[in-house]
Amino acid sequence: MQSVFQVEVRSEGRAAIIVVTGELDLASSPALEAELQRVSGTETELLVLDLRRLEFMDSTGLSIIVKAHQHLADEGRTLCLIRGPQQVQRLLDLTGVAERIALADTPEEILNGV
Image (tube, rainbow, N blue to C red; front, side, top):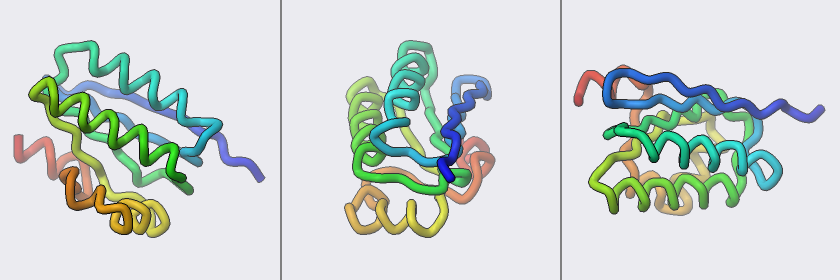
């Protein structure tokens, strides 16, 4: 059964929280990429990408996250990740992304520290 991919965005002051649901892969990644570009065109200083509802992520999704992180960092802004399920977290750990991008268990953990 194919999972439906969804991207939800909400603003919290100068932060944006993007919640992704389903499978982040070659077919669904353009939707996330478009939303990341849209949000990065705003005054958002902190972007929180919530991976808790992801069922699967492949290298395409990982690449989009890394590119978004670099783009935001170049502009003096920050991307943080909310830890996803085991498969997603394992991919982040194995590729070293978990060491480069701040991780937290909940968006509130990041927002309260800002």
